[in-house]
Image (cartoon, rainbow, N blue to C red; front, side):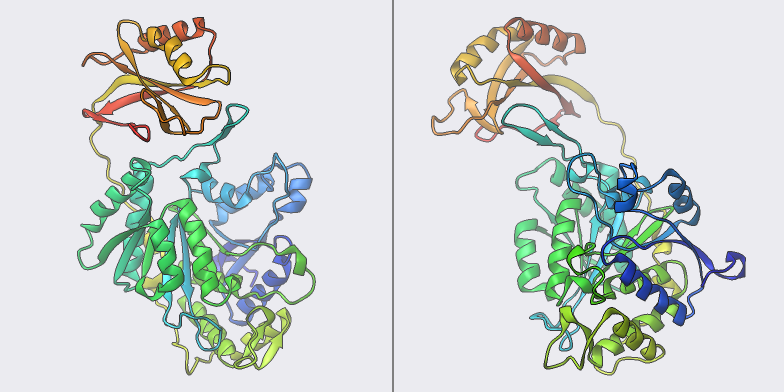
Length: 489
């Protein structure tokens, strides 16, 4: 497969990873070679060994240059050492290369792979860069730790529009958004709002939405009602593993991470250290990820041959131990035995399972450059501030008494909440309080505040001896509050 890209071979980067990674990558490369994939491969070392060499991200600087040059990355699972100081390399690569769309097809292969859901064929498209996976965390008091959930309007539009473009390109009929905007009305609310706006541009595709908890329950119970699901980062991570597992095994699922400039393809499972080196790992997840890679780089003929060969091998009962079933499995395969069985099936099509057919139009590369609208800037007015205080000594009423006068002529202390629940005024005595208090000050009149007004407030609060640990400015955007109310307000 190694060759000169000017002779038709496409440059890609390969990493063999950790745990079972080297075994399943060896299997995948053997299949790609047997299928005559036109690839010019450069290998890099990433993962556990690089962490231990002192690279906190698990990758050397020169490897970034290779990834950026080749633009296509086939990656085996890696192990992130436990303990502080080590960041997830998967997240780092996705965010560093702008791979905003995570695409995970989850398909059942009934009856040859045991599942309760014979008609399942759902694609989960997950936003890949934002949400809680920004990894911005703080310890603020003895009791309270914080993780910031960051959602941007452009991020919502890119992933929603990508989902509809994917559905249109792949002849899918429905896109469903999963959100939790009954609780997170601003962050999840903007995702839902943008989803509806984008859906209007695709009238031929049905669009609906579900609250993520009931959505996840329906994936587990009736996944056949879904076609394409688009959702935020954390929800997508969770539900795509659920969906993959109920097809029969999480080991069967591949994943694509697509950006405007680069793409990464991987199995969705981890490095599975307990079975590393035993030769029993199922390479299917990485193999099917390589099929997605081949469509992306414009080799649908090879992708089709490998995918149909894989389906044929599964249909004929060549199964690794994770999907072995006495009724339909003919051979409990090692990794190498399954690889050999698949290679023997190249050029054939399954008889019971539905054969796949790929064309150049299947390529994700046709969906890059997703347009994002730029709305007119809103009128942004500073109308108050939330001041967060670390306090164990004072009761709620004592804390309020100290703060009321600090608002001065321009601001009123409106509410004090603890862990998001209102405790003053008129709080309930049963409400449990930690040492983390949010004290909201709002302007007395209609005139916007200035930064100097907040500085004066902070100075007066500092004079009370209270421990201010964080502040959050409160703005109106075109006259509408850009902040949530406390629970109970």
